[in-house]
Image (cartoon, rainbow, N blue to C red; front, side):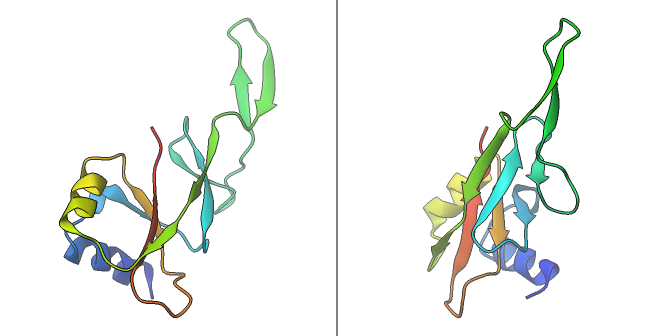
Length: 108
């Protein structure tokens, strides 16, 4: 399934387009809270330079979170409402022959 088709699948279920981010990763992604993007994908380095405000800088992973994408057989009205009222979802088409939706919520 192409990226556009994957997004359309969620939109047809009622999810707002601005709540959908897609990935080719099959089950987990590394999300940067500070940069608001998937890291370790498309050449984006997961290490981040952290400035302590006193002129000291260090490399850190502390702003990253692992997001697990779970398979759901359907999206209910409640699921769609939860997604549309959240920070959004990261979804993939890696369903391994199963029908449904595979996504994880973007943390705050």
